[in-house]
Length: 112
Image (spheres, rainbow, N blue to C red):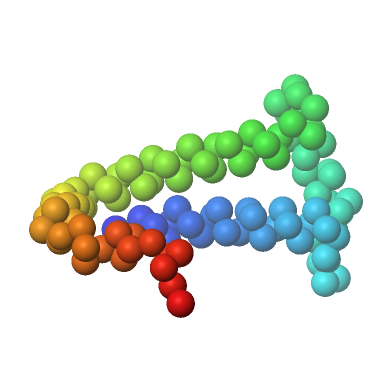
């Protein structure tokens, strides 16, 4: 599971850092981090896909969100017994406490 998360988060971090650095033209002397390279990459992708280059970053962001939901669903499925036990402990702790012991039972307007 650890390698699964590393192999998922690594490319996302690499893409996100490249996009952020090249978008704001923080090149540090590296051509791939310049704004010219940024625009060139998206022009090429736009030409290959047959769509305007400015529509590609929102599509990539949406794809990252959907992929992340799938990854978290897989993790939740693998840890479903532990999550169910935590949820049951949480529910049992909440039902057993009297209303006077809860912090929200006393109004804060009574504070000195």
